[in-house]
Image (cartoon, rainbow, N blue to C red; front, top):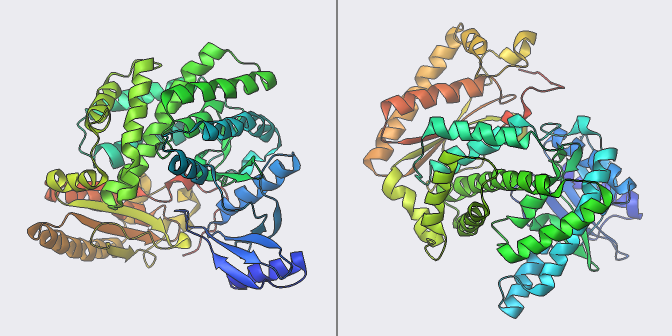
Length: 496
């Protein structure tokens, strides 16, 4: 099989009649995908992409062809090779809505210049057709990791907020009451019309500007969902900080375009919109917490004050349903970060050290998607390979289950190799934790990997988390299962 970059050269030659004269790496976007720009001898250019996840690639390519055929502003996919995981796409340039906003701010000194508001308006006026027409033409059966932004998807986002923001930022909350509010919010979201295509990550970095026109990219996570979600994603983004007054005008512009294409009840629509805005804000704050507090990347913390201000705005408007515990949590966040009381990124990054002591991050993963990113100030910790152990995924009875299920746990613990592996890893981890505590280190990452990231690795992460929480109550243990969104697999490729 060809190496990905060489395959991109071949695709470029097939498209333009000659190999590229130059290839330049493009900045990473935080995902596992990588991008290059290829330059032809005749002035032709194209974007080459390498995606390690076949299911995600399949969704993106399928959506791109369908949306493009419907006349929507998405890049043309010239050629692709799904086996190698590469594709060649139309070059839309380098200007995103985010970079245009940053440039306008630098020129004018204004927080949200009027010139950029008109560009945001254009993006939002183009969005209804993308959502409604997209919902009619895309094949949702290839959506990844789920075909709908459903109850399970929303709960994953809300728990991301709980574990990676609230716990790491040491925001106090009552877990039982918080879970009750989560269920209330999910029930509200279930009232929305979800027959449409949602981008899922509709934010300023995924809107390209070419010749004064907005183009949409990076919709590989798209799925069937409610119209309100994408609008909230853009208008309540912590990285852009759209002021409340401009947010209201832009929402009106979106709704004006939407109502011309799709009848709605404006009052009911806006009530659901406030609920989805809360969901999106909590998902974003979970990302800020994980990347900023745990991985100690201060750039992600700079979005927290804007997010806190957005929460304050939503609370002023009134929450769409009673959420007493969440409202108390939001008030603590607003009090800590907004209204001129915002901590600097440096102060916020240091705060977990003073209160949390050692944070232990436990992660399960699939080797198919590569090693997890090193996290923490001290460059990681342990990565344990579980692939030599008996694999429940090879048996039909367990393929739709995971290491969280009792029957899988019972099956695994029926094998002696499991207990030997546990004793060895437990001893190594305990010795490291004891050492880190004595030296007052603040982060340790422990990852367990297996073939699919669904059975063996999940079992050991959960077992290790319970053990460490009981043995070291002074530490903070954070658990994540990187591949969870893809359970169960519809088209498994079960190998040892």
